[in-house]
Length: 170
Length: 102
Image (cartoon, rainbow over all chains, first blue to last red; front, side, top):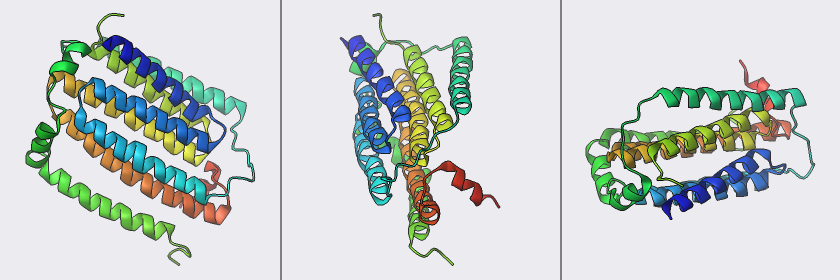
């Protein structure tokens, strides 16, 4: 049953990911991206990573995708300008992606993975993805990076406003 | 269908990462290229979360949280740059970013 859910989510994830990069309209890409995020969230459910389920849905499927949709709304894409690379470049891109996949898998095969257990057992017994252990880790071991990330967010906020402001800086 | 081990997640994440790389390489629409980058980030997130769950160590999932934070900041700034270039060139084609070289 768990294996079936894993393969179902994996298939959905790959169909959605391929449609994201192959769709003609950016809006369709965004909507397929939401499907891909839901499939990834399903994988987090299988891994019993409850905190990541919530954060993934809120941050990715919620905030980031709304940002994309909002940007598309601000752009006037009705003119139908073609953004196509030449056939050679597209072919070269696909071949490069496939070669990267081959090299990475060849490298992974040599790695000696010592973690034992299977998903059915891990999904039942794993407690590391619950909110409490993650909160303790976040506020004890990772307190300084956590606070620094708030400064990063402030900088990103100011930068986005400065860049997006009409009229520019000069 | 045998049991799902960590190896399955390694291959899944690798393939998803390759899809993201191919998406960045074959498209010229900046929006879709940004989504390809999101796919790559999510492949890494999935592998980190799976490794963390299989090895019973919560650090990996904390890293996923930080990657999400950085991705959100990156997308906000990236889309702001996109809007700025669109306002100047009325296009979201990547070739207009050639002007950014300095």
